[in-house]
Length: 155
Image 1: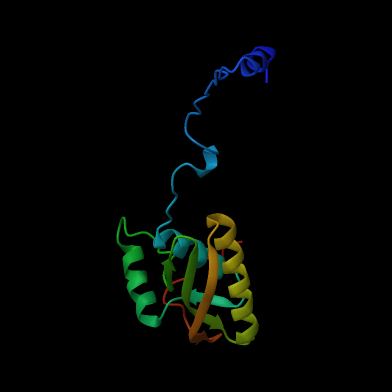
Image 2 (image 1 turned 135 degrees about the vertical axis):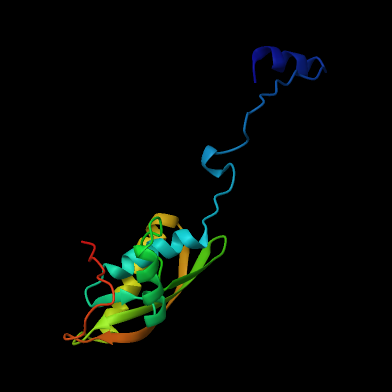
C-alpha cells in the first residue's frame, strides 16, 4: 500500500481502489473453441495407415472399386479417407479401419504398426486422445493378383 493509503486508513477513511480492466479475459490460447470434423481425422488416419509397410490398400473390395471409378471422374479426386471411419468427440476420438494386407506379412505386426502410426499422427496433429483403433483386415493381396487400382506408397 502507498503512504497515502496508509495515512487515510489511520484517519478512518477508506483508501481508493483502482480497478484494472483486463480485455479478453484470460490466456489467449483458451479463448474460443476448436472443433475438428470427422473427415479431418479420417484423412489423417488414412494417410498414416497407408504409410505402414505391409498395408496394400484401404477399404473393402466394393469401396475400392467405387473409389477407382470416382478417381477417374474429373474432379472426383482420390479419397485418402477410404476405409476409415472416425467418431470425434470434444477431446477423444475412436477409429475403425479396413485394410488389405500384402501376402507374406504378419497381420498382427502390421495391425500393431498401423495402430501405433495412426495414434501418433492423429494425437500429434489434432490434440485429441485416440481411445481405440479397430482394424478389420478385409483381404490379402496375393503377389500374382492384378491391382484394381494402383495406390501410390507415400514415403
